Length: 536
Image 1 (cartoon, rainbow, N blue to C red):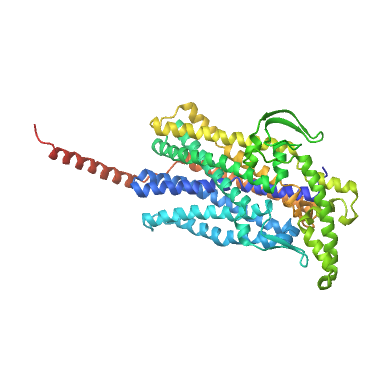
Image 2: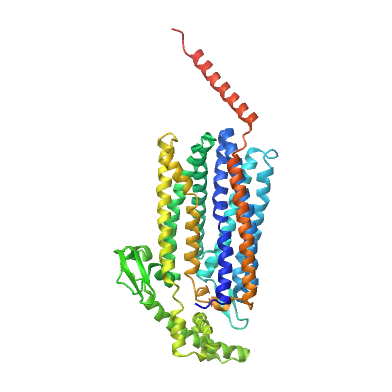
């Protein structure tokens, strides 16, 4: 593959996005876990739960700050590196990003300050409300960003305007309730909950292995195991829903993930393992589970899932249809108000395939001049590289089921074995801390790499979306981002490890006061029982 401006721009955005997503899932999950812990504190008034809230809240705050710092630069890249994309679809893509800033970012930024500095200034209930608003704000932020991303995967509620040469929104609620966006939101948020649960579980296990902060660690593990078990089940179930929605909106991505070259009779089998060969268009040594892919992808026994070869043929047909739309578009734009009604009708009939004609611009300036060979090359370009998608998806799924088993085990030990955990299990929990980040990054790789060659699926090819920059300019900014983000990551890790080693702050006066009140209540009960019991 020729490494040009398009590939370098993709690499830059992928690098910054994956760095940023090192912080996002922990922010999403810890915000909710901290709010749950403070809820228990308000209900029980036990100092240990306040101590837990403050400790995990401190780690949340460090992660939140670094997440904001790495996320801001990403939005500037749309104008800097992807200017034609921003021009072409900015009317749709910009709306959820603006709402993310107005409704979510300011909400969470405001209440994060109140959370950290309002402990002695707000009542318990008021501070609890603040904690939940921080959690809601964090999740709202993810919602709007994933609505924007979901539209790129499934561009609904918009149409192309031949006069402005831009996509324009026609139905905001179609964009808002896009099935891909909604499935992606709940799947991503649940993955964040699993990430935080594994993190809390692992850090707590580390404390137990060193016999430090035992009471806090055991309670934290109990909360994390229960929350993590529900979240892990949710990730798997909602991931299945994402696959089902891809059957309608991104058939090529689904076929590539499955390495399904030919269309099978329904219901299609699932390739559990195999070795995809893109040149030979076959998967070697495949081990199949009969019917499984048909049931997962279509929820039926009679609906076919098209294979890659048939989808390439369909893409070729759509390229030819898009060439008709492109020719009509030139006529409509040239004559404008005096355009031939027949040409206008012809454009409207084929406008849905205009983006496929743009695939030819990789080979020829004017799509109407494309040869038969170039049309076939453009159709083959709709197939992403299969083997990394195939293996990334399977590793992600394996990790997902591993999280279910881990959380179920710790939930059982916490609920039925008196919060006693064997040392080998504690060691496993510590070593497992990086696993959910690996799974999350693999998930984003599958989602974004599988969409190629499109920036907006079926509408705008990636090759057309980039800015007119030189390779040197993009390479220098990429190097700068990598250096800067690496420094931020080292700072994050240093701060997190520092406060984990330091451990939670214990308010001795409050703990002693609670213990005294508790002893007084027990003494009062014993006295009441003695008075109520008649002397023998």
